[in-house]
Image 1 (cartoon, rainbow, N blue to C red):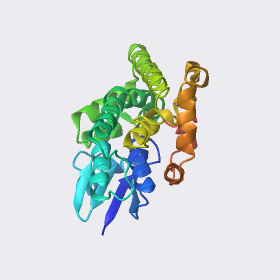
Image 2: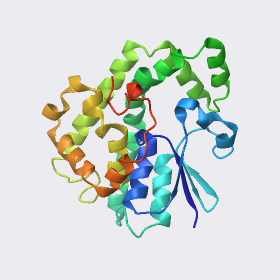
Image 3: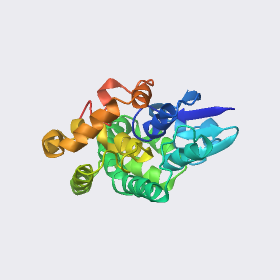
Image 4: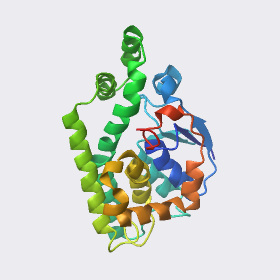
Length: 253
């Protein structure tokens, strides 16, 4: 069996599927893609994923992209350590939470990360070189995102993104009053999803939200996530980010 995982730092999308790989105890080859050097837009990587985005899972030659799809694929192919409920209702709950995180959480946390980190990187590049780099980006929306990061996201957009994050934290806080994990009594891919996209770093990224005070169940859930061997193993993967730019994980604002 050949299992190769192309990824960046252990945060956000790259962490999301890394947690599932580690939780399942799968033996895979780790291939780091340096986003700060724009390797995701290089010819060799676009030949693997034409969209020029990480992570990518390659299993016996089959290329699987999109983290929620990767995690479902891992459940289908490697069911020995399940991260998905066996019953239909449980599966539906898990997928509902994954859809919520994918559509109503990820992009809004990401906007703050791009504003604080990618914007710094983009503005450090000379205009001519920046335009050449943007031309290499396969997805039009990603090209626009890089250009917006260079000029800066508007205060209105950032405030709207924060409102979305507050709503998500409140929603999950209420849900955890009656559930151990997001899909119920079982740890699932939904927990890996919210942890990677928001839960692991929301307190550090947004201290003004007073997460510990306002969402204590989210903090308890996060600490239980941190204690899981698979999560710890995923977080121990190499992090090549310039320490001064670690805004996504909340170490720097």
